[in-house]
Image 1 (cartoon, one colour):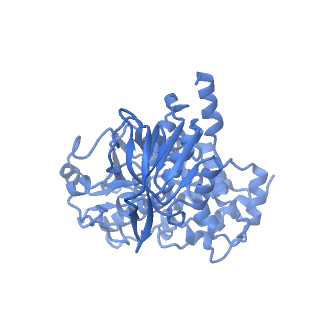
Image 2 (image 1 turned 120 degrees about the vertical axis):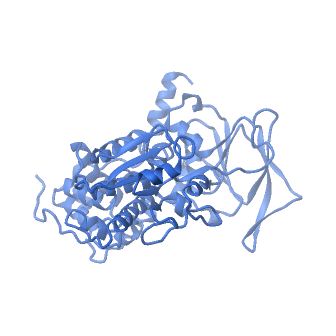
Image 3 (image 1 turned 180 degrees about the vertical axis):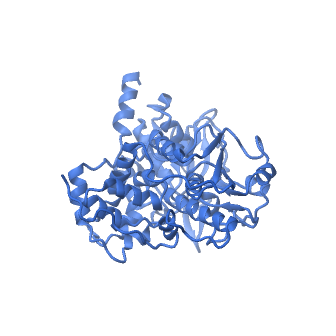
Length: 465
C-alpha cells in the first residue's frame, strides 16, 4: 500500500466505534434515567460507581461534579468509559431492557469534561511518612497508587516497559481506545505525585528482597505472562504470532501490517481473539477466519463482540482443533481435526482432517500466569499460578504484600483491575494504620468498596444554559 492509502486505513478503519455524545444528547439521555433507589447498574459495576448520582449531575449541568463522582469510585473511569463491556455490565442491568441508558457514553461525557480542565478533582493526602511499592503500572497498579496517594502514602511504581498503562496502552482494541488516550489519563492521574520507574523488571533490574526491605508495603499488579502456545508442529513458522503482539503492532501504527495478509486464521474463542479478527480485517486481510475448538455457545467472547466481527466479514469455524501449521519456511495453511465435546472434554476425530489455506496465523488462546515474580516475593500461588489473596483486603500469604488484577483473577476486565487496586489500597492502609476509619476525604470511595453509595447529590437545582 502507498503511504497515503496506509494513512487512510488508520483514519477510516480505526476511528472510535462509540462516538462522544453532544451536549444536547447528554442532556436528553440523562433525563431518561429513573435514578433507581436500589440501582441494578451500580450492582453490576465492579467499582460500584454511583451511576444514578453522576447521571443526575449531568442532568443538572454539573459535568465536573459527575466526573468527580466517577473518579472517586473508579480512578480509571476515563478509560473504562471507552473499554468497559457495558452491554454485559451496567447497561446490561439497566431497567430499560430494549434501549438502556447509554451509561458508558455519559461517563465519557463527564470524564472528558474533567480532562478538558487538565486538573484532577482531588488532591494527595497529607504525607503520613509511609512508602509503598507498586509492581506493574497497569490498571490495577495505577488504581492502587492513586488511592494510596490520596491517603498520604509515598508511592513508587516499577514498570518493566518504557511506557505505563499495561493492556490499556498496548492491548485494547484500537477502535475502542488508542494508546494516547491511555497515556493522557495516566498523565492526569500522576499529578498526584506518584513516582514511576520505567524499564525496571523485578529479578532482572531490581531484587524483590530489596523492594521488601525499602518499602512498608508492596502491591503486585503484574498481570499475566507470555501468550500460551498451541504446542503443534509448525507453530514457529514465519507468519505465526500471538494476538497481543499483533494488536500492539496495530496500536503502534505499524505500516507493514496494512495489506500484509490475504488470508488470516485466528485461533481462539475469547474477546482477544475477536479483536485480532477485527484488526486483521481492518488492516486489509481479505479473508479472516476465527477457528474455535468448541461450539459457538462455549465461546467466552461477548455476543456483541462476535456480532461486530461478523459485521466486519469474519468467518466463524467452530468444533475444529488445529493439528499443525503447514508450510516450509512460512505459513501456508492450518490443518484441523473436527471435534465434539464429550463430558465437558474436547475430543478430536483422529481419522478426519481438513486444511484451511492462509498466510498468517494469530494465536489467541490466553496467557500464562506470571509465576516468577510472586515466587520471588515469597507469596503463595494456586495450582494455576494465580496469586492467592484474602478476598476482603487482597493481602497475600506474605503480610506486607498485596496483589490484584489479572495476576489474581486470571484475566478479567480493566474495571475489575481498577476495583482490585482500590480495595488493596484500603487494605494496605488498614494494615499500616490498624483501626483506621474513612475520613471526610475518603469516606465516599471507601464506601464503594462495599457497594454503598453515600455521597449527597451536588447541584440538584442546576439548569442548562
